[in-house]
Length: 146
Image (cartoon, rainbow, N blue to C red; front, top):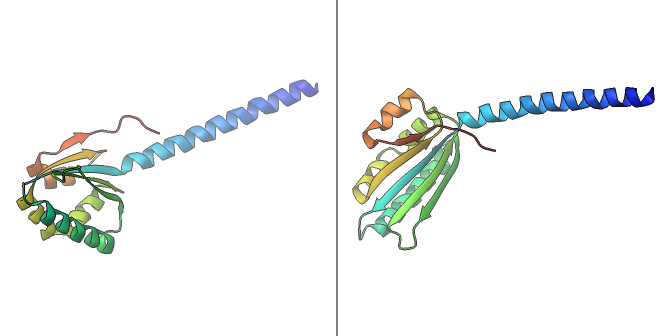
């Protein structure tokens, strides 16, 4: 009798763990899919590397001061400083639109110094896609992850 009682409790505990773990996993995935990631790729015009880096520093200061829903804003340069990639993560599409508004004319200055190609990862809103359509972004939908 104790073995059957013990085994029944193990089965019940396993059921509860699997049920709630599954719910937590789904909740995490739903929350993860709300985040929008962006890779901003810049091919810097020859001789404009220093001006580009100075503008990048101004953008970082602006983001630190004004953005509230930016989760990641990391800048990377190639070894010869001819290319730059900015890895960005936002809570949602509205956060990206606010970020763009906060940067204002700074972003336009980048376009004078480099070629720009955006990549968007996640499920961007129609409003965001319309706002960036002139840059012909590549959009990647979330498939799976940890």
